[in-house]
Length: 252
Image (cartoon, rainbow, N blue to C red; front, side):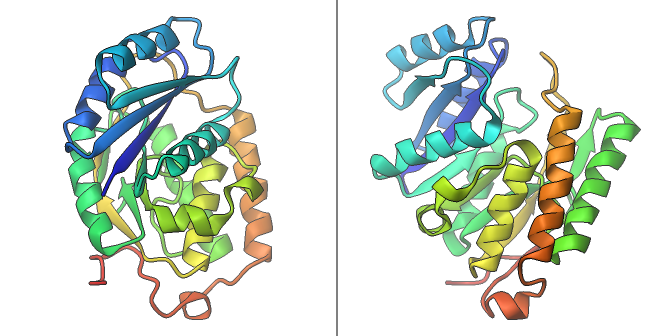
């Protein structure tokens, strides 16, 4: 499959080159699109230099911070217009290890959505303070309780989609950002009957820069998840009998 890895950036100059080169190493059919939100540290200019030297890399520039969800929507549309078959989300700060990308793509052979999960058996988090771990685990439990989706890491930002999923989800109708964007995408995929699987990863706290999490992002996720839980099925049996979550991908 021709795969596009979309990497949103804001002040990621210190780690961008390693993230891009790691993603490209996943295979000859893998390309990278950097979507930079006007980084004042020169990330956008660096992305342009990388793209000028590597034909499998492109860079898009936005005038300022416009949100994670809108960056991915822009990247997905860009890739769909150019005929890509699969799409990956990956952070530029190396908390998402590019070496895990081949495993995500391999799982996509027999699934429609693959989540790189911190919380399935074999997954773990390194160098996060206990408070951050509790917030993340608690948020994911809240998502499962309210919506019924049997995903252990619905807020994970490292994942892969088949093109058919993005075509079916109507990206223009998705307005959420941050964690709620990640939840909405996998929730809609599951409710639409697509096969969703989780593969374990080791998530490592970023070594450079600062986290983009804020109270506003957390608050948006809480109320949006509540709304989605009220309006929608809570059982896989009522969604689609072929939906699979948190296990080995079912043969197609």
